[in-house]
Length: 123
Image 1 (cartoon, rainbow, N blue to C red):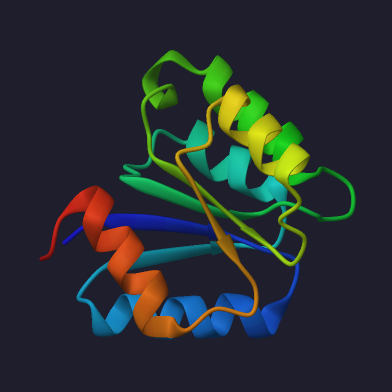
Image 2: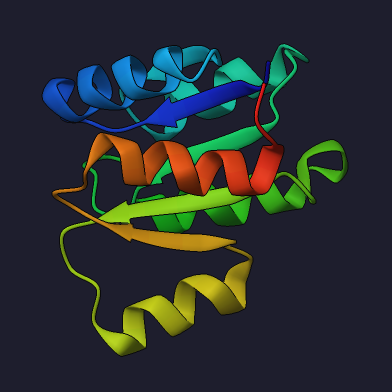
């Protein structure tokens, strides 16, 4: 069982992601934004993968990714962006900054689970 941190300002996306990941036997922690996600990570809580919206108020997904990668203990944690906008330049920027994958919203729950399982293994 992997521990997945889902970061999205949209409650519906958090709900669908949580449901899909729970069906896959993963443990899920939800955060409404980048600051909440970083606060959770700063507690030292285990996290095997981060699933993060790219466009959020207060702190964008890119800003969240950059801050996560600054933390030595999180530098190698797989990081998947969820985004409604997947223009080539944006995808390239995210990958250059350390994102592992991109998933476009809306997504199929089974596709989300397959991406996660491909990175952390099947429980």
